[in-house]
Length: 458
Image 1 (cartoon, helix red, strand yellow):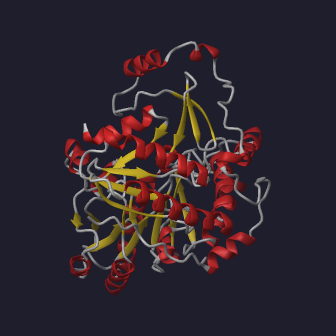
Image 2: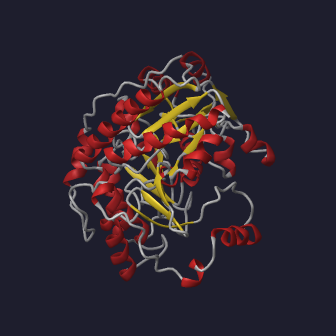
């Protein structure tokens, strides 16, 4: 059985990223160094919620949820009420070590003091004005994203799926702009098996999981799914000249924590350039420091025309962003796309606070170090277990593939005070902790995880 973890890559920072560090914050107080989870008071914070809420037990809250909320989520039977650092607490006061980060969202953990201060200060001044007007925080965030990436311009939205919807529209518009005299410019799309790009209708059409798509068919036509990593098939299909854009995750998170190779991404880049097809990197889950690079694609030295980001960008507030080159931006006119809430002052202020911390080279180096330590411990403690097929990952996005469903293990860990996710076909344990997790907490997590493994033998 293959138990090797992915070899960590060197972590040089791009020149563009170094330029981003030179940009000064404007009224966004942040500390120069990240705060490790165990360096903060992790006792359950005193809640300022309505006291009547805490007079109810979890069972009552869950019953009310089932009565009043549309049943689209298969929730874990835990009612969380507060958090600090890498710890979460339910309304009965039970403590949990969080390896989920709200599905790779809470990169700075829960209640980061600089993030909280930035949000409070902005909320006191201005929260929302719409995109009819200019606002300082949106411009400041855009400047940081551009100076720290391949991109020339940014479009803001409210989530990862919205970012991919915008990328779909921008790709179609770019092709029409680039082929003004053609009646049928390229309008098709390529995505890959095991991918996940969102649940709204356009992004859903780019998502390969049949159970996500089938209840809502017909979805947007014109999407072809190819084998992830099959360079020959991808290049051949791109060269048909009928593809507006190719969407690919440098690391598939929902699909099972699979990493692309440099050769694969470079071949896609070359083939797209040859025919004028746009290359879109979806870094909604794997971007923004999760791999130990600011952007996952930097590890491969291959750069897209469009990149979609979201989850961790605003530290838990809803945001999405589409980063584009000037050639793509030049095809977009007034009214081509828009959003009422996108890029409002509050969420952009939160994102500046997050980005200023994650963009610190010391912070990124710490992600690499802790990610390697995490994988090494997992191999040491679980490598000999008959249920473990592979341990893989990059930085602090790690997958433990099993030969059985991971659900019993998830339940056992939750009862033992550890929160984890699944991925793939439900047989992969997905580990995406806050990027501020300490080595002591890594050790605690692996001990709990290893101690719960016998449940898989039942």
